[in-house]
Amino acid sequence: MKNVDDLIESAGELSERGFSKGEIADELNVSRETARWLVERTGGAGPSAPPAPTDAGGPHDIHVDWSAIGRDSARLTYVAKAMADLLSKQGDAVDLTVGIEKAGGPLATVVAQELDTDVAAYAPRKHQWEEGDLGEFEGTFSRNFADIRDRACYVVDDTITSGTTMTETVEAIRERGGEPVACVVLVDKQGTDAIDGVPVYSLVQAIRVGDDT
Image (cartoon, rainbow, N blue to C red; front, side, top):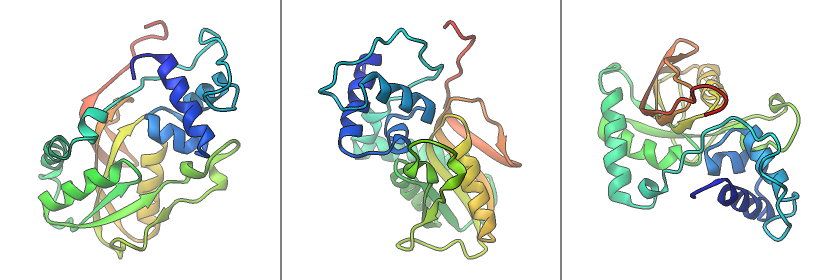
């Protein structure tokens, strides 16, 4: 994607396909507020509706397009191995890697292989979100993967936008009796050092400087 118009078109297409605004935020690596703004620019009726003007007070966000990595298995493996290296000195007792769906899943699989752990998958509550309080929804751990079972865990995702999803995942692991030891992402848009006392590592930090940049 090259510009905001491309993002608006993509948001409209995803909305037309029945994606929730939370899922659109996840697909486009933007905040929920940005996803809502993008969908509103399409008139809420998909790509066939004429877009609203893009200069009407847009959100302050940074779009991250890492599809050049995600669409190639070799590149994805190389990058995930680098993420695993960031975690490698965070404790020998860790035996579970939790991938945050959807994009965190493939990355977590490679990380788990590199660090010789089992794999778990967590679907955050934002995937159900359309409007209102996000606290009305619940995230879930997939039964098709390993259970937390009071284990020490790494947490893997592609981006941190506001930190809400990573915070939710850390809390969900603790509620299951697990111990989140460290988190890792491809890109951190907040400059996050830790979440609820759990260190956060990233390959890239993308920080907005000022509101007019």
